[in-house]
Amino acid sequence: MTEWTPCCAGCVRLGGKTRFPAQDPDMAMAVAQKFNHLLASLWHVGQKPLQPERVFTVDRAEVPRLFWKPYIYAGYRPLHQTWCFYFRTLFEQHNEAVNVWTHLLAALALLLRLVILVWSVDFWEDPHALPLLIIVLASFTYLSFSALAHLLQAKSEFWHYSFFFLDYVGVAVYQFGSALAHFYYAIEPTWHAQVQAIFLPMAAFLAWLSCAGSCYNKYSQKPGLLGRTCQEVPSALAYALDISPVVHRIIVSPLPPEDDPALLYHKCQVVFFLLAAAFFSTVMPESWFPGSCHIFGQGHQVFHVFLVLCTLAQLEAVTLDYQARRPIYEPLHARWPHNFSGLFLLTVGSSMLTALLLSLLVRRKLRQKTK
Image (cartoon, rainbow, N blue to C red; front, top):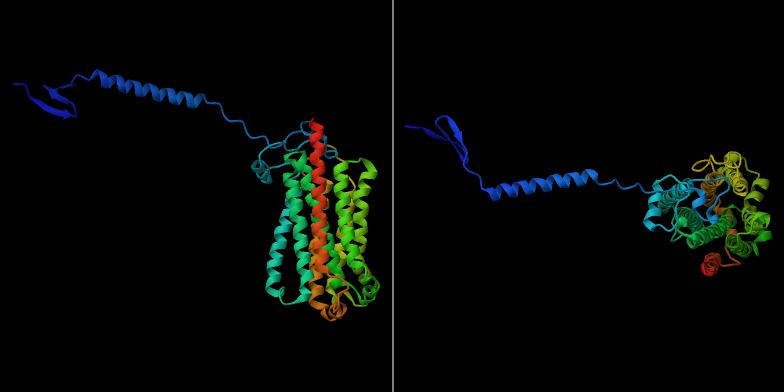
């Protein structure tokens, strides 16, 4: 008698040999089709072309002349990308990256400085603390506006103009904030007696004129000395007035440096500003190394660094003056010939309106250009 035993699911061992049952042909066909589909899918995955990497920079020839920088031939970002693209370039290498980060990091440092000041200065109850708050906010404004301008200006020609107009508004706000802080805390009584009637109104006017001149220079794109005169002469006049209380104090102060630590910071801010102005007004060192400063080493980047150092030194000096010179500035400002808060708002408003007007003119010019 033949012995059989079960072997596994679907088969038996019969007389020492394994017997398989007959397979269902439909099931076999279904399995074969699924296997073929799997092989086809794997083949398509293997043959699928790789997505090209996103191009974050192009050469100068691929962007309009408006975006060209002297002696910088690469590292430009393509136009007409999404806003997300330009925000992503914050973490990419291009010829504006250093300009963005120098002022962005400084703006964040100022926010931290403001938090520290809030713990030690009563901005709400002390009326003499308001100019200190204004200079901190004005500094943050110009730094953040500058970082935004350098980050987003490559979106299009219109946005290039508009963001740099906004940058000039920030500069005007900072100029008046600096003038106010110097006039309030750093000024000596003798200089205060001579300029108190005209100082702040002139500071507000020159701050607006600096903004208007810079916007017009950007809008007109006048080459050479004429164009730079529109921008640099009003700025130089504004700085000469704004820094005059500090310079006068440095000259006439009888106190030794150890008795007036703010003076050292004031001297540093003057030196840093003059160095910044020198690099802003020239195209060095990139003119010495044409084609080698696409990412690092541009004069405008050095200008940013020195301007940040100037601002930080200035804020330290003004803070020390606020703390140590109260017996001097309280009697001087017991009665105000002008409302400095109103002048500050007037400077902000007039500069914003000027930038808006020039932006509208730019839009009209670009529309005529495309017709």
